Each structure stands twice: as C-alpha cells, then as structure tokens.
Image (cartoon, rainbow, N blue to C red; front, side, top):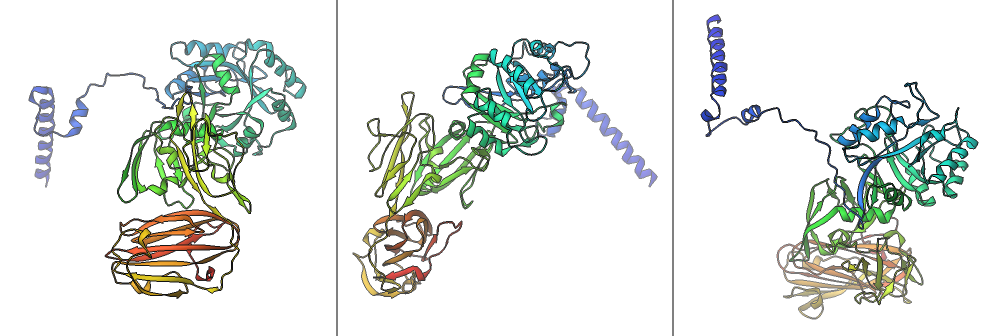
Length: 618
C-alpha cells in the first residue's frame, strides 16, 4: 500500500512539473488541437485594471433625456458614516447621474472641526468634477411634528439657513421663506416613517397647496409608500425614490442582482434650470426594486419608448408572430386579467410569441408599474406592436361604462393630440379632437384613433365597441333552434345555412353537436334568445374544431371563422338586462370535431359553460 501511494505521489509531482514546463515553454508549444478552457483564462494577464461603473439604459421620452438621480443622501458631516467623496464614488460606480447632498439641519450633528454647512457639498463637488456627475446643494430640515422631514434642493450658501434647536412650524416657515427667495425646490420626505402612516399633516398639505412643496418620496431606502402615489396625483407632486443612505449603499442594496433606489428625471440637460423645470413639470419616475411609479401618461410613454417591436408578421390562420425588445434596464411584467397570456420582458432582453390576431386587442397590465396605490397602466397588446415611433392611443378599459342610453369611454393619456372617429372611417386632423373627457356612443361601431406629435402620426388604433339594448320580444320556452347539415364542403361560416344537405332540425336544450360526432364535412346553425340578468360587459369564448362565429343582435362577438383545427376566439359585448337574439354558425372539415361556447358574466374572473337555462326560443 505504501509503495502504491509513493508511485501516485511521484506521478502527481511529475504532472505538476510537466505542467510548469509546458507553461514556461510559451504559446509556441500550446496544443491547438485540444486544451481545457480554464487554462486559457488562467494564462491571461491580470494587470488590466479599470473602473467599471454600472451602465443603466433608459430611453428618451418626448425628446427629453433620462437622468438617474438620488436626491436624498447623508455624509459624515451629518449623522452618516460615509464621506462626501465616497458618496460621489458610489454614485459613479452605481450609474447615478445626479446626486444631492442633503445633510440634516440643525447643523452640525457631529463635530468635524467645521461649522460650515457647505463643506459636504464642496467636497462632493470637487470629487465629481471629472466624473460627469451633477451635484446638487441642499439639506434636510429635521423637524418635530407636524413638520416632519423636508428636503430643500438647489440652494445657495447653506450658512444662511443656520438655526439652533429642532424645528417647529414657525422655525420651518422662516427657513422655507429663505428657500423660496432662492427659487429652491422643496420636497416632503418618507411620509410613512416612523409610524408607518403615510397620511400628510395639515402643515405639509398647506405648503403643498401654496406651491412651496413640489415633490413627495414614494420610496425611501427599503420602504414603499403606495399612498404617496395617490397624494402625488391629487396634489400634482413629482414622485421621488431616494436612498436616504446613512451607511455605504452596498450595505442597503444588492447591486449585482438589483439596484439602489433612484429617481428618473426627464430633462433637456443636467443644468440647474433644466432639472428644476423637469421636477416642476413632474417629469419624474420613482424606481426601486424594479417597481416604477409615476403619472400614467409618463409611465406608458416610458414603457413604449423602452420596448421596440423587432418584427410583427401576420401568419396564415389569423395568427401574428412578433418579437419585442426591451432596450431599458427596467424589466416589465405584463399580465392579462386571467393570467393566460402573460409576457415578461427582461431588462435588455426579448419576448417572442405567436398569437391570434384578435388577441392583439387583449388588454395587458404592467404589474410592476404603478399609476396609483392600487392602479397599473393597462393597454392593448397592439400598443406595444405599433412601430410608428409615436404612442398609439387606446381606450382606457376601466373608463368604459354602459347604460340604457349607450356606451361612453375615455382614451388613455398619451403625449400628443388624439383624433378619432366612431364610424370606422380613417381619422385625421379633421376628425373629432379628443379633449380629455368622455366619448359617448349611442349605437355600436368601430372606434379608430391616431395620436399626432411633432409632425408625426401614430399607427391607427382600431377597436370594435359592441353593445346592445334589450329587445322587446319574449322567449316562449327554454331551448335553442338548430339546423344540422351534412356534405358541407366549404370552409367558412358564411356558407352555413345556404349549402349542404339539411339532415335534421328542431330544438335542443343546449348548444351541442351530437348529430355530427365522428363525422366529417358537416355544419350547424343555432338560433335563439339569450336572457341577460344584469347590465354590463359579457365575455364569450368560442372553442371549436373547426370554424365558428357568434352574433348577438347582429353584432359579431366571436369570430373563429378559420380552418386550423382546434382554435379559440374570444370576444366581448356590453348587454342591457333583458332578452337578446343570438346566432351561432359552426362547420367541421375533416378529422376531429369539437364545439364549446363559454361566457364570463360581470364581476366574474373566469369563463364558465354557457348554461342551457338562459337560452330560449321565440
């Protein structure tokens, strides 16, 4: 045994020596036929050192550049553990374009050998001189209730703000008066800290209403205040995401797998004037933990600018093949109401799919974008497939209402001017100009709309707006009339009832195709009355092999008129409580056959089989 170990040990030494000799021989003796990959990496020189700051990709929106900003930060000259110079280096390495130094006031919190309130800003500005980082001079008012904490940005000499002791309303008002005289920008901070109550005090609301306070933090460090989004929308405030960091940022945020809190500012450039103009115009998005909060129009424009359709191709059988590219560093999580068609667009990545053409009008919600404490932007898939470069207008789903007089809706906010028609004609600048209010329709029709901005025009948005009033007739008895045809040798619902041989007709208790099971080349025509028990939006789903369609009161609701085997066509229609006539046409070519009609009633989240008890004959 000892002899065996000695041999193994000697062989190992020989191998090590041989490897050392091989490496020493240089590249001339490399085995170009076969080598371990690791050996190449090991032989690369390790003297190539450079700073590698994080690259954050964000698109322009409406001609404005996107800048990343942290507008709430502390240093060793306040109560933090990091020097101003290191704050700048952190910002540089983590992709921050704009940094505000906002040490606490009253000042100083610690004795650092100087009472000059400007010292932290001066050190940071010097460190950032050659790094293309904008440093904003500011401070944080640290007051007792009802003042709370307030940031003052874009100040002059900070020493003019010096006051002793904690701040009450009177002291704070004197400070804010100086700030207003300097055209500073003022924010209210972390509304949910420290009591987890994001309501605003009367003092803060008063200074919002008089124009003193212009922004609110939605994110602060690890905290999220959804109610702050509603405050921002109600009082017309810019939304901020800030680190409020007192320790090194790597101690708060996982920079490899996530990112620090930051505010995205859309401005012409990084001058004081341009940044303040953007903040006062509320062109900001609050971004933290891959959640983005902002006003709906800006959020949807940001989403649209981030996502480019690489291609959109129409295929046979009513299908669409598309690939989308997300050019930004923000991922997007898109979902439908029933979560059957969800789309994930990773940062710097693609999403590709083949779907029915009709599904491009299905509404998607951006789950990680917030335009309210409980609200997310929602849009048809066609909004993302539009490659015109101008955001396509679309009907805002939650705005649609229906009563006994007709249907009304509004368009979702977009940057530009929307022109629309209600009769299916092509819209232009001579069409109706959308004024932001409700659009009313007294009869069903096709809405078409375009958005015009900067001399450019979006692709045409088109949507059927089907609705129907209850009829003045009666259902005699429960059931549905049917006609069954054989030798149906056409592929199209338009021929059902006019060709083929009628083999059977009568009344069924429900919609089913038992006469044709196991056969080829047959068709059905179903006719009757459907009872609607509640006014509202009804969704229908035709799932057949082969083709079919559904009409309610002569309105085409589901168009599954294709011969591609099993396929699904979904549609929706607003129906008034009462009775409505319906017609279903179905044909089978060859091979397997199937027929199923499902519906989704108002306030329901799922499709159910259409029950026979709501079907009647006249």
